[in-house]
Length: 74
Ligand SMILES: [Zn+2]
Image 1: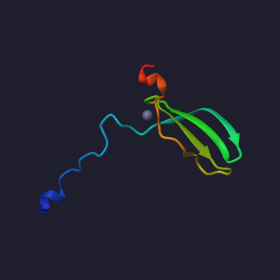
Image 2: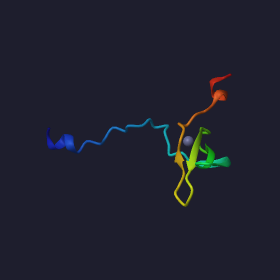
Image 3: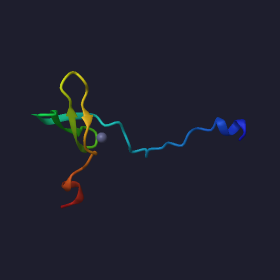
């Protein structure tokens, strides 16, 4: 490996269309394991389910982002 190879820009590992999702809570309810949050990205519209444990910790995702059946044309 030469020095020039070390200074080449890294190839992006994500497509250019990818972005950091900006989640907003559409609905929420309490369960025995914590607060279940149904969130949607304001940028691309994908949805995800998060679980917020009791306490002040931030929510963690318990589902993958999905566009739902509407995006499949059904
Ligand atoms: Zn998004």
